[in-house]
Structures are given as structure tokens and as C-alpha cells.
Length: 330
Image (cartoon, rainbow, N blue to C red; front, side, top):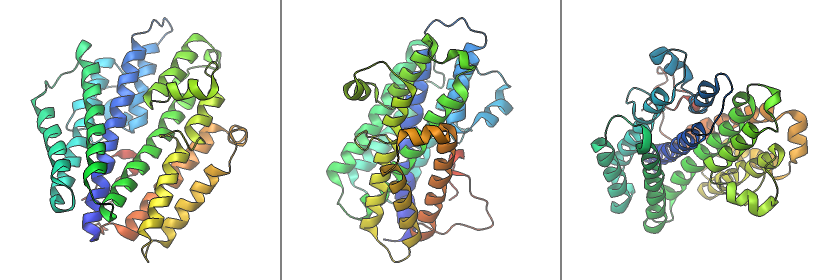
């Protein structure tokens, strides 16, 4: 497969997954904001979370000032075309990448992406009140529909492999950042740990990655930070866990197995093994924030090795956007 084609497929998948993940975070943040909380700065603290998860807090502050309010944050992250981390931008770039490789994807895949983009542009540019949840559900449903159509119509060849690489790299990055933000940013003080606010925040975290039912099925107990971290980091049977995502990335790179991809396979295998053989007690002894920060750095290195080995060469005079800043240099 041509590296340019692989590049477009990889980024198409990342942007579709990114749009869904962003909708998940905004949906849970909105639901949590409806709960009573009398603590000072509760709303601003809550709405800073999606800004930090998407890596666009600085851009938001430059445009709206320092106060994070529900209406402005939702507008900025959901539908702002000038925000490279918005749902709008992610779906636009997914369509642009899909259009560039129409011959490498099926007609059904293109129809889903194109129809999603056209429908998005027919929506109201403002979101508020009872229109928020239906919009977030729509984004998630369109992502699920695209994923199902892809698996049901595309050949099991390198095109699917690069789509899978983009999907699971993006998913691992998102899960790590959600967990890190919860642990490092959301709680304003240690007094909140174990309280009602803490319980709802951990529940919101699980809902944002569709893991609340899985948690109850596996642990059958009250929500505790260590078990949530174990579920989202080390459980290979949890679809959005770091371990599950690296399982897919590692196995997909083994299938591609190009002569230039040795370093990418080494990075993926090493990261996969560190998850497979680790214990949650060791992670907490090291510090969850420190562990996740290191993981995000290693995911970034892995993504760069994949780009170097398999994807299109980029203009070296143009500084590439970091993975966490969400924009792609074409």
C-alpha cells in the first residue's frame, strides 16, 4: 500500500474515534453538571476537564478568557470550526481524509462519513439545554455506524489494518488522558476523596468510556479509584482499556510486518508487555499520574515510529502538531 493512502486511512480512523471520544466526555460532563454541588468554583472546575482532556485549554482561554462555563466550553469543543480539537473539525478532517482515498474504502463507508458531515452542517450552530444530549448521542451513533459498516464491508487487508491502528492509538490516548485528568485535575482537594462528589466523578469517568456496567459485573462493589484504574489500564477484556488497545495495536503491527517497521513493532511490543505483566499495586506505588504521563509519552513515540515507518513523509520545514493538540499536518 502507498504510504499516502495508509496515512489518510490512519488519520480518517483517528478523527472518527476522536469525535466520538470528545462527545463522550462532553456528554458525561454535562450530565454531571446537573447534579447539585455547592462547592466554590464547582462548575468551572468541572468544565475545565474536557478542555484539558482535549488539549485545548490554552486556545479556549485565549478566545473566552479564564472562566470555563458550560455554554462556552460546549460551543468551543463541539462546533467551533476554529478549534482543531472540536467535534466539528474532527468530522471535517475525517471526511477530507476519506475523500482522498475513495478507492481504498467501500462505498458504504464513504456514504456514512459524507452523510454525517452534511447532517452536521444542517444542525444549529448553537447547542444548549435539551439539545445537548441528543447531539452527543448522534455523534456516538454515527461513529458506531461507521465502525460497523467498516468491519462488515471492507476487505481484511492493509486498509483495515491502518484503520485499526488509527482507531486504537487514538482510543488508548483518550482513555489515558481521561483517567489522568480525573486523578490530577478534577479533585480540588484531598478532602473530596471518598465523598459524594468523588463517587459521582468516578462514576462519570466509567460512563465516559462505557465501563460502568463492566465495573459492576467484575467487581460487584462500590466504586474505588484503584479498581477503576485497574479496569481502565490493565484489564484486557475491557474494550477501552489501555491493555486492550495495545493488544490490538501490537497484533495489527505484526500483521503489517513491513521491513521498515521494526522499531514501531518494538515500541508497541514493549508497551504491550508492560501492561500485560504489570500490577495495579505497582502503578499506584509509582504514582498513577506519573505512570499515565509516561504512557502518553510512549504512545506519542509509538505514533511517530508508525508514521516514520509506514505513513506519508511530511514537509520537514513544517513543525507537526503534537498528538495531544489534535491537528494533522497534511
